Length: 455
Image 1 (tube, rainbow, N blue to C red):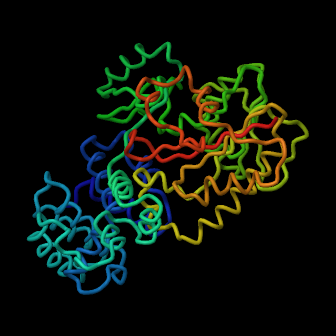
Image 2 (image 1 turned 90 degrees about the vertical axis):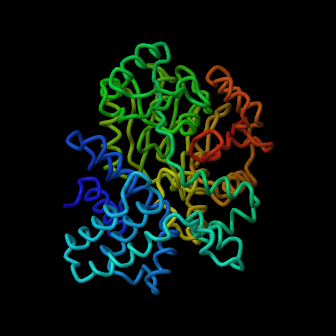
Image 3 (image 1 turned 45 degrees about the vertical axis):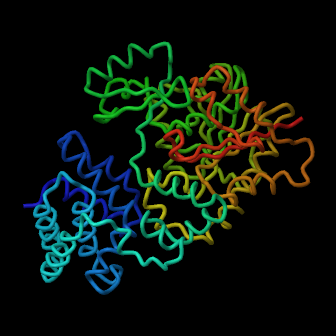
């Protein structure tokens, strides 16, 4: 017999590898109301744990296999990774269960001939599962490779971070990327805080305050999507740093606002509320199916005054009017979200950063052409990489007249009434005036933002 949790974990991991799907999306679909909470918790731990620790798991498996895991059939590789993850990282699961169910997973995938291999490899691995992984990595290995194995990141990524951040900050970032992220939520009306929190707690959820914003909070002990507060649009699930980005625009009532890369819409909703019924908010995206999903999301949030537009924002924009406020939350590598989306680290290639830079620069230049005099634009990404962040801003502004980046003190004014005391004391802006959040420091994703104004 294979437990429901392991069946779900195996199938999700298979689709992540074979179809390029995202684990969080698949888990949201698979872990419906019919799945027990304990099974949902274990399935999530196995999927995210295997993805976060894949390089280390493969390194340890290859000591037993004497050949690369990549040369194995996918069902065999996944069964081995799931089994070894349980042996090394889960103290609650008996070794016999981890080994036996991995063998059954291979059989259920019609790879019965590999069952003996899986059984033998995992039994040998179980004997050293409590031994520190450090002792298996060659002491003379280059620093980047050693850290990449032990913290399970691509070597090229670790090399970049070491060169830019140094060892201490790099290790802190690697460790943060391997921890389960906080499940943060946005409270859409802070005046209803006590009422909503009480309702959530009655469902068994545990509530913790935000680390930056008064309107943010974190939950544990269950899924907020199953609550009436979520269904009625009183709350949304959103990383706390992500919630902060649209606030930097300082949208006022009656403003004309453009959200240029709006899907999935989490940053659009606070813009709509701030602009009010007399404001104009245009939410654009190049994919029609993502706009349809946004429309459903806005129905839940009871936001009807959003104008959705399908367009390619890297080309000249089809608007005759100018906008007081523009948000360019650009498509990016997502290296600030590796804890939440660990599969990204195995898919991203270094050459893609320059490809993304070209797209992001085109998006920002296109948006700046529609920024009204006295207007404000926020360019943001969930990336940690300079090519996608400050280098994009510098290139877009090079030679441009009438545009300037706001200093940290000016940008922070938009947050003046929205921060918690801890948020006020934290360094949210660097000395160049850029907003930065680093995974681990405030338990958020890694975000970058630059605020630009037109004189």
